[in-house]
Length: 96
Image (cartoon, rainbow, N blue to C red; front, side):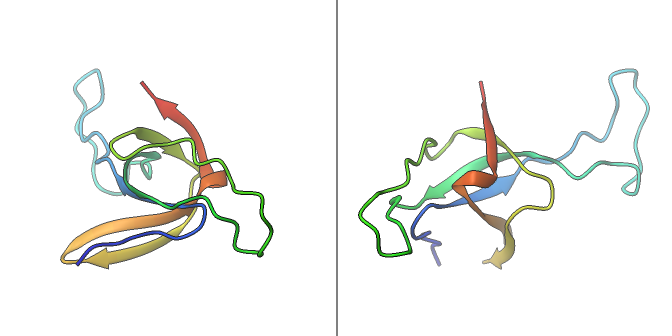
């Protein structure tokens, strides 16, 4: 199955959080922060959902690494993989 977002929505897959700190300390699952870096999997066409003619500029592409707002979006599970569908406004930056 394939997820195809509509309007100004973007499907992302979260990048796994680091399990070891830079100093070598291994973190337990409860000590890890919720990751905010994700990889863009699919992008909507930017058409507005209110019927107006002004399209929303979708500034990310498939494969981009992005920072999303904490707790943003809707989590979905498709074919055993977990994804989050976010609005373009919930994407804060592109990571280069």
